[in-house]
Image (cartoon, rainbow, N blue to C red; front, side, top):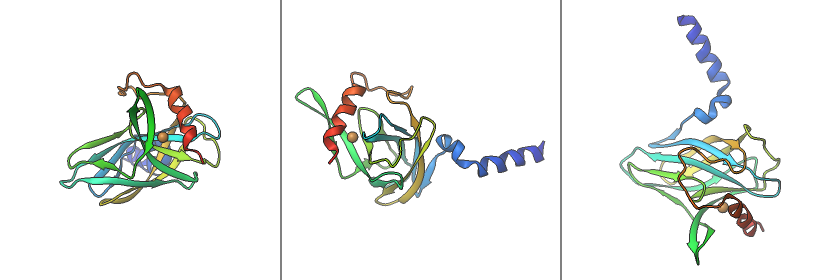
Length: 172
Ligand SMILES: [Cu+2]
């Protein structure tokens, strides 16, 4: 039994990427969980989501992200303007001390531009996220189908399709 569990552990370690979605990515006192990406169609940017927990006593900020699989990654948020949900680029996402910052559909998200190839659901997008204080951490975003919503999402009234159309205005 003991030997078996050691073998299982060894397999799990070598096949790390397969279990990436279940992984927590920790750097300093910051931990990212539930990292996933929504990919629509070619030529449209993908969106990256995760929960960021700050277990430390000092506020931190997510200041940038990049991927070897993409041209660039921007930090975006949604704002209501004249009753229309719009996306706006921001410089950072605050991660308060002892708090959680959610990157989720309809709110803060990472916008992934210029993917070198179109990933399929279940594929991974490698991503490096940089925190002002904690430093940088490498992670994998699990690709999910367009329109997918996490069960614990509660962003009612947000249109997934409209969201995607507005991404076009960001492409230059
Ligand atoms: Cu966006």
